[in-house]
Image: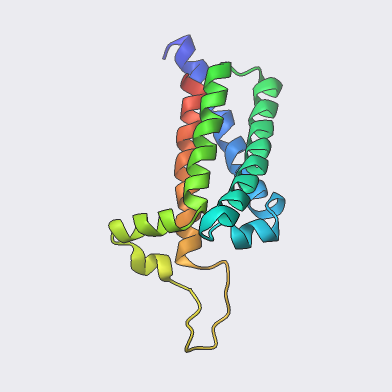
Length: 155
């Protein structure tokens, strides 16, 4: 492996866990309950709350990547950093509008899994984080965080 390849691998290896930890914190602790409840609604209100969530989310991921970048002296370029953050933010917003991810689930034949765990109106079900929609949402975010880490390390 070339020295450049080793530096890129180190940047990827440090950036990905930083993004994953930041994602978990930003999605579950930084996001407000109001944003979580409203960001998937149609129209301006849903779009606005999703955008506010993604701004705070991106501040956390950018801070996390900056921290490991500086702490380890990683070979990350400013364009790679910016592109990785933009990719993460745009794909996060896309999925968190909810109807988009639901459409993708339908298109890929995963609509049954998407609806898994959703409260049924004719039953005494309680909502929980254990829904198929939540799992697909988190999986989508992890996919794009992996790609964002790769872009950050390679650009």
